[in-house]
Length: 410
Ligand SMILES: Cc1cc2nc3c(=O)[nH]c(=O)nc-3n(C[C@H](O)[C@H](O)[C@H](O)COP(=O)(O)OP(=O)(O)OC[C@H]3O[C@@H](n4cnc5c(N)ncnc54)[C@H](O)[C@@H]3O)c2cc1C
Image: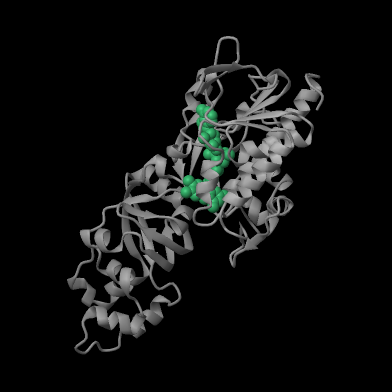
């Protein structure tokens, strides 16, 4: 390894850390990128398994509103948003593909070609990659302590960018173990909680055995005042994905307040209650209820099974009850799925602990980026966008700080 005292350590090789590394190399600063795993960017690769939704093409104000009231994050995303990410991909030789709802993907959908091109580019610019380097904390001399296959290594770089991710999908490297080390150093941090996560529903054996893995398409999902149109997936333990992630914050609120939560499904969102009521006036004749419903409403498969799930079977013969079931089918949610299964987590380093360049105020030369900072956003490309935007902000923060402290020429 070169003399690291003249270089910056990037710890964590996800989208946030790699973007910080890119900005620094572009500013002529040497970087060493460390990751605990045998290879870089494992969660980024997993995110591309069913299509890497890297950002979202929509009106800027709509885009920024996905980050709630977090104006500091909004400013960073305003300075590096969808158009910048698209241009950055193209610069790496990867064309974007924009889906009908504005979701932007790399044209080949997967992450691997993009990650490969990115790592090659970074190495061409002088970045050195160090896999299997697990950061363990700081020693008494303030050095970074790494566990490596050849033993413990202590390093004192010119500055460090921590981009260690949140606290889910531990097997991909983001195990959240860093949180205790930061808390021990007095860095204001909050415990992890799931975001964009699945929920537990106590399904009957029939739903569990016959329909786990099935998507429920074109439904409206409501929790309290929040409603969204879309699809989601039935799992053996409950529900996840798409529309469920969109309402996950409302579900968590209900769970926190009441111990359980109710998800209302409109199985036929394109038909009003009144029209449905009229359609169901049609005599059933000798048809079974399922055959009748199939004929009159077009419902089948998993949606039909849900009509019967936990229903008062006798009451299904009552049209008012049936209309309510089809338009506002209640699913009782008993808890959130385990933290480790969440697509993203909230919690981590508090914004109040960080200055405008994302440096820890109480630890000069220590910067943070990505999901390890406490912010929330829905799925749809907003997560990776924020990781890259904060990675860029931290990279610029380091470059400015190095200049200001005249440590190395940046
Ligand atoms: C299944 C799945 C699908 C997803 N799909 C999308 C999507 O389509 N669009 C989207 O916007 N978001 C998606 N996300 C979320 C997105 O992947 C994350 O928000 C993003 O990767 C976080 O980036 P990051 O750089 O902050 O951290 P990470 O990508 O988590 O990277 C952190 C890195 O730090 C390393 N590390 C952790 N601890 C240590 C340590 N002690 N020492 C050294 N290295 C360490 C890890 O090995 C890891 O490589 C998805 C997530 C999952 C799980």
